[in-house]
Length: 400
Image 1 (spheres, rainbow, N blue to C red):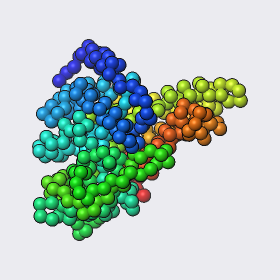
Image 2 (tube, rainbow, N blue to C red):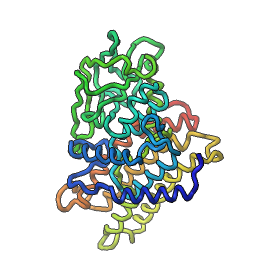
Image 3 (cartoon, rainbow, N blue to C red):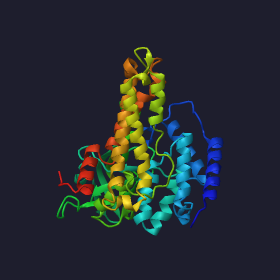
């Protein structure tokens, strides 16, 4: 389906006007930066209502198939919506795991019944999803997951625990990696993948208090929880393959996400504005050549990262190492965010240590953002793991 430049221009104007009119604005309480910090009922309801409103206006899941609740339109329309959301800095879509990981996975390899059952609820935020991959003793070593799923008649009985399950207390479903067998040629062979219900007896998500005093994470305990046998995706033993596909969505290395913002992150332009307001030795901080140099480096890096997405569409630039840009995106983006938040604290001098109180600059948002930035460098594979992946799969270096 071809779309004219005029159609896209008119659509952008339509979206921009709708967002200006419907932006819910300041709710009067602290909003989380991402789904990993949603910890109160008022935060959750505010963000879920916003996602529902965006979806019912036709601006979410626009490229997903219409027969499952999507818009059935070319991807470019959803890209425009997401761009305008970022420009106007509206709230993010709280069902991040459903929209960006579970949904694309179900559309890619789910059965017809699974697509009809899950996709619309993901888009409308009626059905919130969480992720059950990491365990207290097995995070980066995901292949050693020990949570068990034992077949019992028409059901599976789940026992064990998962950790860092963001939105666990609000989720209706979990993408769950569990061990159905201890036999096989390697540790990966006994893993299976489930679209597991959360609101069943024996599933107990317990919030974890973070350094910022937020409660976005949970440890989820499975105490012989019984789930229907048809919750398994694919066949027993195919869990590792499905989990790896899920991680490609999580890392942004594979497309198919529903769209919308996944976070309300501070960005490099915010750091520039902070630098303009900051001082060094009684003078504007930007008059310091070292600070100017750091800012220029950050701006170049941020612009380079932004250009990586269109670069992936240029065959000549990707022919030698076709996955180089896609597989390095998560590493580049999360580490840049962590470093420029750290730099922002250094601009505040002694006030950089003030997280709360009247002397906390901008209400302490920079400190909060810096603390929370580490979550993104760990989730979906730590930065160290990402370096290994790029080295082995992109550069062809020997396995470390």
